[in-house]
Length: 236
Picture 1 (cartoon, rainbow, N blue to C red):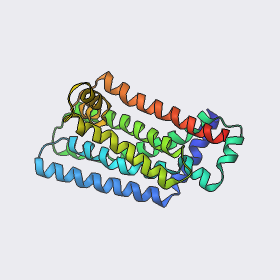
Picture 2: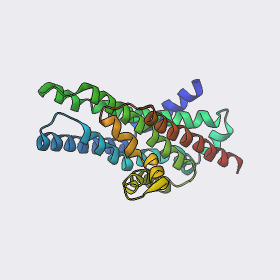
Picture 3: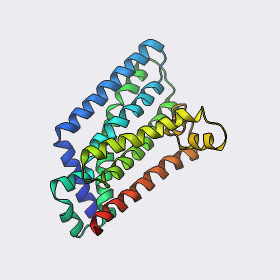
Picture 4: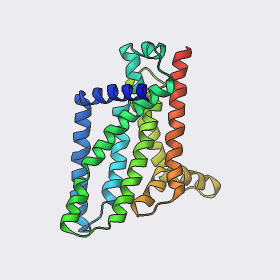
């Protein structure tokens, strides 16, 4: 745990010192504020469903940008060999970096608490739906970030890591749109694979263990693949 915490602190410090991180966070919050205001003033309904759905799409772009350096950046800086030959196991390295990125996005999530605060001050929104929406959002974040570090573990280029992460996350959304036009078992498979299908129920106040298992499975499998990607570097 001590080694994981050391890696976590190092990675989190690099985020805090990164102008890119501040720029991305600022853009996320600005867009979140815009979508919140548009939804509130056009629908005049005290709900956050539209905001959470838009945030999920925004993060398809933002997460790969902030996770692309997690492993690929180490290789570009020439420090990956030192890490792989030090008394740090591959799972410790991956988990430390993953948790640092997750902590950053949890901090962003905390910043969004201003929006339900505004709703509570002017109306009586459904608190249960807000809580389940945040639960779904955190599970979504966990899966997004795991996919981001997975992509970063298989390339030495941060650009390639970012683009591939964006492509995979976008595919998980597109497959949901396609499922409505595909019949039979293939359509059901596409629907089961869709992030939006599983995420949407949380925004409606529904907690289904199937959806929780879905997001946790993506997170765990992506992290395991990321560990294999780092291990491949150690063996080569």
